[in-house]
Image 1 (cartoon, rainbow, N blue to C red):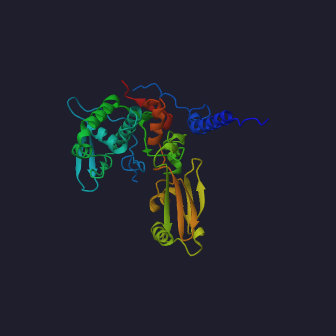
Image 2 (cartoon, helix red, strand yellow):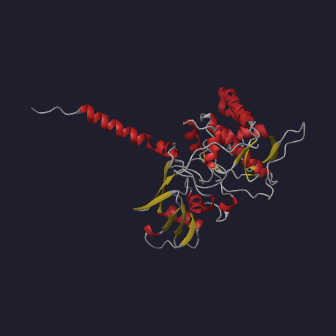
Image 3 (cartoon, rainbow, N blue to C red):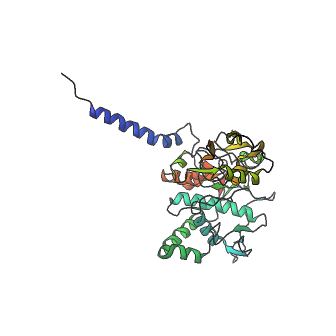
Length: 356
């Protein structure tokens, strides 16, 4: 007698396989083999834009005086502020700290993000701009484009009847973490951040300068596999031969593109995080970040293939890749990590100061 087909057993097998594939990245992320998301040390105390505009700041580290220590508190009765310069108008103006920080969060993050991710972003932004303020240079912004800062009037115009709700959310986030900064060996840390990683953040020396790792050892590569679930993780850029020649002429005027199209961009050298460190464009060596900027790619984590009359770039992630991944912060927060754990993960070795 012919035995019936074991539908239930097969169905159970496929359900089990689906769960393994779906949950494996998260399991790996929190396994003992992955970098741990531990609590911050006990407290003693592109430019790429963020999610709302597509990428994330800062694109390069600012210069910093030798004594970039936490900024002193204002005198009694004096309200601390930041000095900004609008790059589109040339206007220089000052904004109270709390107002600036609330606006910076709105310019950088989707306000539907978990609260702990927004708090992590607030601390990173406040630390970064306090550090820049100590250089004596105004903070570059573009109010019309919502780059770094947008005035209250712009928020009312964009949010309409939801303005009060979003304003209350931002003010609440600021109130909970205001004054908190990350330091390293007593100095304000360079708390770079960006939108989405290709699966791991990037060591700073692979993006900015060979000696940057010794200056900022907390900006190292850490796992961030949850980014792959974010909108915008994958993108493509297609160039016709004419378009690529025009871009190459700007990037490397001495590049020789006389050979077959598949020889125009070769010798791609990758970092362990999957970012292109260097490549040869028509015989001229360029960094991955130079190629990213010159070709308008979302990140330097790319592969390419030659087509009949052009080149196709397949890109993972969005932004320079150094410091905190905003998508990774959201992923961690959704899985129960608080903002201190998020900051400790992306800036290992730093100390969170100013916690009440």
